[in-house]
Length: 546
Image (cartoon, rainbow, N blue to C red; front, side, top):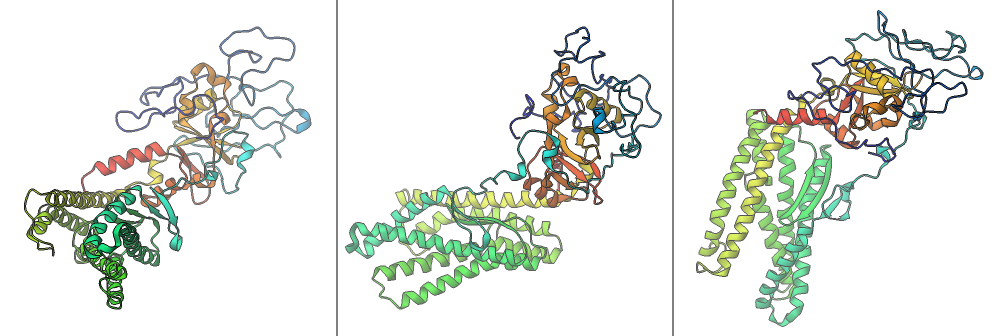
């Protein structure tokens, strides 16, 4: 949250009730029980003048009273015990001086603000909008209002620089997609340099210490081939209008983070197949280039190593188990046959888990027997330990990736249950100079659990933060105006009421905030959406079985 707000505005919001429903707006600094009636608090102490210190009784002075602790205006006069037969939208404002025109109409049933106030003219005073207690407040928000007009402090979240989404060093943005190198890449690059350097010592012993420079070049060239593999997925995703968040090169290869799922099984198959296909093409290119040079030279050894490594990458990724490309191809086939993407995900994920167990057991056995092209090894040597460790790491990556694929599939299946209209809290509009105690009284009387700060025309300016309300002690609430506890409404904080599922989560991720203004397609206020409510609904949906 921006700095410069009222004290203790960054406290955690009140915890929800036992049934998962957030509590109503507090009036005493702590969440109240929604099943109990809350006595209304007076908007201001019953005194003719504003006291110099809150909570201290002082005699009225004949001279001009000293301003109280309220920042923007004096507290509103207490309302009489009688209530109007039909409630109306609050229109609370400070009486205007005679040279500034007539004062706006006060809330029906409230006491007069001053005896000498001029009589309002109906031609210029805004008319109160009737609001039924069973309906949400509707205020036209079609006309944009400048955030600076609300007089609140604090920054604009939409103007803050975006956070770095990458987990490493940014190398570039091909096709507009950022490419990051994770710190673990440097570890595997050092490992490749060491292993390939020992092999070069047997093939080209005349290189001496320079063999490690050649090995480092091979490590960089190999991961450049992996980047080409991932760029193939990225280009295909962009061709199908699927956003790609980033490409990351890490310990065991690379990852293209595609934010949305393919719409058809055919596109899913193509999207998965282009990566191994391009690795096979690279292997063929390196093979042709290798035939054009001498085999026992540095270029010949490098080209042979790149040809073999790309062939291994292609074959390994074609294995039919998630999270590998072959698993996504299997998922597309099952999706096409059954018509359900979830069935394809379940089948490919379990095949992936079986594949992980096969790698854990079979890879060391194949290496020991020499079936992978090497010499047969004795059990118990250092090579046996290295093979077992490598197999365990690969198996863990495949098993974890398969489990994550299942969780993501369950998430996508339950996402449509998250609807902004169903999760929105009812809100009460209040003007900027309304004391917090009076705003809470109106909200509790109307059964609302959110406050929207509006201007004199009823246009929304800000949303009062629930955490900021909790941070204000009860005895200070008559002296604190709602404008000091509100967050300016930016364009990203206006959420259409019809948003649901992944589109809703994308909208909230684009502009992080604690509360959002939910509006109808016509521009009217529908209510306030709390990020905490969305999170609770998300966790509840994920807990249900598929």
